[in-house]
Length: 472
Image (cartoon, rainbow, N blue to C red; front, side, top):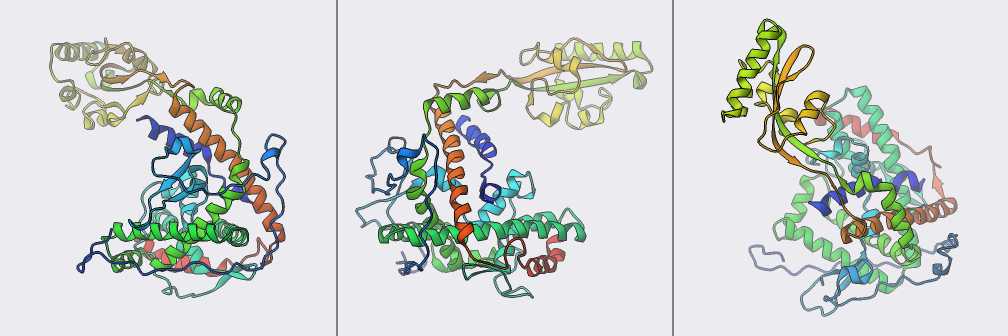
């Protein structure tokens, strides 16, 4: 189950990360002191988590502790094994809070974040920014408080499931009819319930296995996150609450959810991440297998195009004379875009509208242009040059190279490449270990009703209540 739900789509994330590698509150009354929030509670009595079997290469690390040691602010994250140094919650604190590795942070997230990430990886509606502003606030649904499933006596409520998937459903509602939307809502609800079930199991394991120091660290990280939200909202707690209400969420619920995330992250950082080992051989093998896909910048170009068809000109000879004259004018310095954007000089309406820009002025990878004869001639040019007249069976073309970027590969020795590969392999190993943990926890858990027989009805009913609003 874990592999399906929480597989991070590491190839998707890896491509995005590679692209990235290339290219305080002050209300009216002055600074406001945050009231202390205590998230610490005695952990419930749970059975010990079973031992996780690992392969021979990782065996010596099975018992190695993963303590989260406090680091000084001068420590370089790259020299600390990927651990982040997080600023203190208050200026008077002399000790800084140490966070978890980026691999754990990226792969252990809130259920709502997982829902949106799932949609992004599927190329779904969440790839565009989606506001929650039309999602109802807690308690506003006609169906209220229905339990879809209990996990070790902890209920998962229908309105929580819908709140997490609301941005995805809102975007989908604009695209489909009511029957299709209902099917989508059921599918999303089923997947999100699995996510929430897994989250409950992980949090319970964290409560059982983490000590007071770890829980204090989770509390501090949560308070830091809380302060960040207040600052982003304008500097006051009330503004943060108001902002959350506008998004259909309760601020205190979000803080509690963040605490659960921090507990789960610390648990996996201590108990599982130390077992992750990435060797130089692993990294070289990954590079060899993905060099062309991930570490090569393909040649790209922007070019403008003019088309003169035989039929529109009254025959081949007339078309040839017309495009030859146009080419002569462009070569002598007349603006190519102005020529291409004149309907009397260009027989392709789309090119006229775009002033000749092929692909709307976007970069085109070498080999991607459909007209192979134009493609071949364009790549012979330097920026500013114009092709000879290109003949096709029914038309003539001329093109001007506007910009070009020649392809290049990043070497394995590049530090950013190695960092990227390490992160990808760490994520792959970490998620495999996490899946094993979840499998063991699931086998020992008590579900009612047992999956896949959860009570989906209330979630789908509430989604259908919102469909007319989201449709608008």
